[in-house]
Length: 297
Image 1 (cartoon, rainbow, N blue to C red):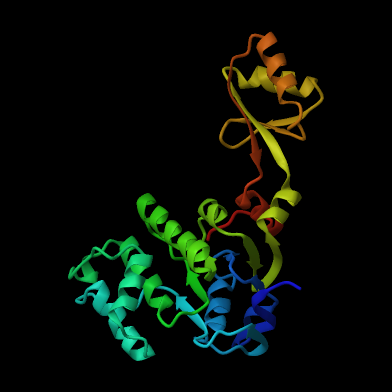
Image 2 (cartoon, rainbow, N blue to C red):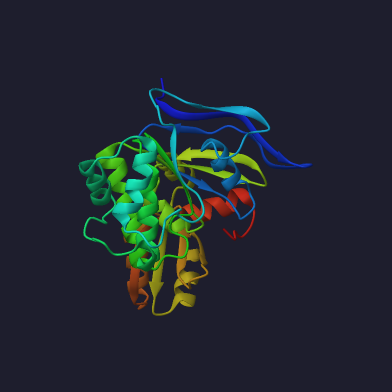
């Protein structure tokens, strides 16, 4: 039996005559990072708000499985922090409200999100990445077994993205915390999540694990040479399905077992091979294939 921590059944949220989310059936396993993907306005935040108890479903249900006394920790939109207080003071305020105020507990939260050395520095002077990590710490107050994060890396610089990713991986791998996260940066989400749900026009149209994604998408060969036009003609004459992708590389389908043969043929034709790698089809490629167009978040 699959060990789910959260499931929804026909979860629906309607505003006026518009269904912001319709018949959503989500299955999140304990201890995984679940990435919720969709365009702006697709219904991601609506679903997350209902699951977090910030909004009431119009119909349908959601269920937390097992012992989860304090429900779900949440960071949706901007972290609710007091800018004139330190990270420690911000966390202490919530700890007092939750009845779990102790210095060792607060120190552990600060260490978990990498803010243990911020001292008395006001949170208002933190970088955006530091504020996001403080928001994650606040979501962890009360020891929820699951946290919900809506676009936690949106607007961060590359260093900030790495720091938040490392924090979330630490929560999953060391603390066993289940994480539901939305992001429009699919390349980054693909490095982090174990499972995904695709929501499109208010409906969940697909749900899959990383292993299932790899099985569905397969792999392809990516090649860069000093004469891609001639190389493409040669590879096609060898009977392979090849094309030039948007980045100017040659993409060869169904040829992962034939890379040596392709490389030898290119070299024998005096075509310099600069790069030849086997690539997994990306999360973004798959997302676009099932939604039928370019994404905008």
